Image (cartoon, rainbow over the protein chains, first blue to last red):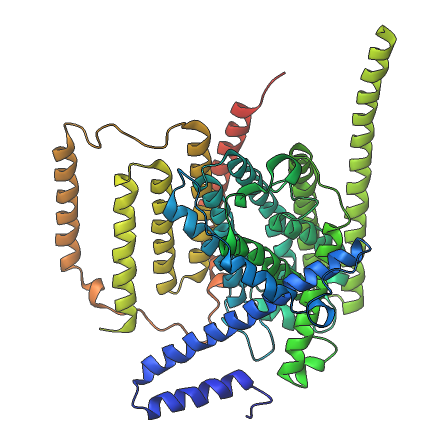
Length: 398
Length: 169
C-alpha cells in the first residue's frame, strides 16, 4: 500500500505513528487524527467554496451575455478574495429587538447543514468519510437542519420581510422533501442498499440515469426547490421581500448564508451525480488512481452545479400558489406513481438479462412521463377554458 | 470508564438539561428550539446503541417535520411569544410528588434487575441492521400485523385531518 493508491490511509497511519512516538495515548491519537481529517475536508471544501463565488459570477455573466469579473488577476480570479475582505471588514449589525443567540446561531447552522452532508459522500473508492448504511436518508436529515436554520434566521431578525421569506422557504422545503425522498428511494431499489458507496458500486454497468431518466429529472427539480434557487427563489423575491430571510444579516454572517447556498448547490450537484450518474466511476478510470476518482467526482459535481445554474438563470420566478400546486398536485403523486412502477418492474424483471431490465425500466419511465404530461395537459386545458369562459361571459355583459 | 460511557453521560446530561429548559423557558420559540436540542440528544443516544436508521429517522421525522410544525403553529397563532403568567399552579407539589415516586419506584425496580450489568453482544461483521429491520416489519413471522395496523391508524388520522381542513365551497 503506498501513497498513490490509498493516500488518506497512508497519511493517517503516518500521523498516528508520529503522535504515538511523542508518547500520546493510542485512542487519543486516533481521535486527533480523525479530527484533523475532518478539518482537512472542511478546509478543502471552504477553499472550493471561495472559487464557487467566482464560478457563479462568471457563469451567470456568460448566460446574460456579459464577461463578469475580469479586473483582478487573470480572469478575475482574485475577485472572490476581494469579496471576502469586503465582507469581513463590513460593520456587523444586529437589528433592534433581535433574539441575539438565535440570530447568531442561524448562519452557523445553515453552513453546518451543508458541511454535514459531506460526512457521507464517497469522494473516491478509498475515501468514503463515514460509510453509513443509511446514507441516503442522512441527506434528508441534514436538510432538516437547513430548514431549521432558515426559520431561526427569519424569526430572530424581528423583520416582517424576513419572516415571510422564511415561511415561504420552509413551506417549500417541507413540500419538496416528499418527492425528493421518493426519488432517493429509486436508486435504493436498484442498488438494494441505502449506502451511498454501494449505490455507486452498483452502477458499474449502467448509470441509473439510463434506468430512470424521469427519476433523475424529478430529483433535479426537488433539489433546486430545496436550494431555493430560481424558479423557486420566491423566498428571496427581491421585488417583494427585498432579500428574504437573510435581509437583516450583514458582513460575514450574510456571507455564511451565501457561501452555504453555493456550496449546497455544488453538493447537491455531486449527490445528483452519485445517485444517477455513477459518482466517482467513469469507465474504470477510478481504479487507476484515487486522485483521478476525486477529479471525476468533482467534475460531475461541477457539471450538476452548472445544470442548476443553467436552470436558475434561464427560468422566471413562479408564484407561491403555483409552486405549492405544482408540488402537491403534480410532482408528489407523479413521484409516488414512478416509485411504485419502479418497484413493481424491479420485482417483475428480477431475473431478466441486463438489456431487458434496462429497456423495461426505461420504457416504464417513458410511459409514466407520457401519462403524467397528458393528465397535466388536459387539466390545464380545462382550467384555461374555465378562465377564458369567465372572461367571455364578463365581456358579453358589458 | 470507557469512551462510550463518557459520551453517554455527557449526551444524557445535555438532553435532560435541554428537556428541562423546554418546560421552563418563558419564550415559546426558545422552548421549541430546546425541544429540538432534546430530540437531537435522543438521536445521539440511538446512535450509541448502534441503531443508525432509527437515529436518522428521529432527526427526519421529529426535527424535520414535527418540531418545524410546532414552530410554524406558534409563529402563526401567537402574537406575543412571551408568557408572563405564573409557571406553576397550586398543585405543583402533587406533580413533584408523583414524579419523585415514579422515579424512586423505577430506580428500585431497575436496581435489582440483572440486565443492567450486561454488555451488548457484538454485532457480526457485515450485519445489515436496515435490512433486518425491513424484514422484521414485513415478514409474516415478524411484526407485519402491528405495522399494518399502525399504517391504517395513521391513514385514518390523515383522512380525518384532510376532511376537517377541507373547505367546502
